[in-house]
Structure formats: structure tokens, C-alpha cells
Image 1 (cartoon, rainbow, N blue to C red):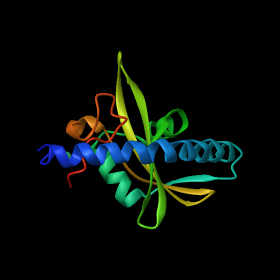
Image 2: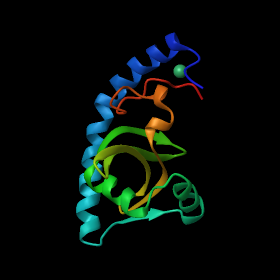
Image 3: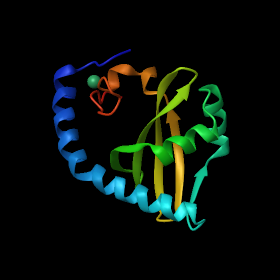
Image 4: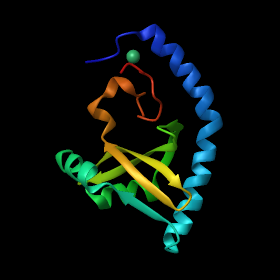
Length: 141
Ligand SMILES: [Zn+2]
């Protein structure tokens, strides 16, 4: 596994950077507003138990881990995905004496109802990310 078209992915990375420079600040604002509402119980983060529960278990990620990343992480990508605005949130989890990165993908279904779609450790597909796991550098499917 790895990138199958470095030149094409290099160009797509350039485009991605330009787009995300524009869109991630919007996502950061959306996340901040959402978290304020969530604290006041005016907004809710949903997890699809059937889908997420099983897969997260396989990947050894708890619901608490997901919340930690959503509450303390930062938006690294904002895009339209299946008709919804979707945010990719990056954070670190403390694991004994080290930290491990985690990516959480949330769909903004409404301002007050967000759904966690998937959660993964970006080190599982390292070629897709830059060295900080913050920039998408490979777009091969
Ligand atoms: Zn690629």
C-alpha cells in the first residue's frame, strides 16, 4: 500500500492546501460554537453505535477518546461530503508516556446535531499524511 501517483497527488495536495487555508478557519469557528452549545446541552454529538461502536472497538478507541479529541483538537480539513459539511478534527491522546494522534470525522447534520462518522489513527496509512498528520498528501483511493 502507498501512493500510486506521486505527481498527481503532489498537485492535489497544492490545491488541497489552498482550499483548506480558506475553509479550516470556518470549521474552527463552527467547532468552537458547537462546543459552547454542547456544554450548555443545547447541542449534541452523536455516535453511530452500529457503525462506529464496532469499528472503534477494533481500533481500540473509546467514546471518551473521541470526546477528548473533539473538545481539545483542531480542524485540519473541512469539506462537503455526501451533502453535509464534514470536519476532520485532529488531536492527540496521552497513552502512558507517549501521545498518539487520532483523526475524528464529524458530519454537521445541523448546527446542533453533529455525527461522528469515523475515527482512525492516521499512522495506519502514513503515506496519506504529512509528518504531522495534519495535511492530506495522498489522494489515491
Ligand atoms: Zn497518492
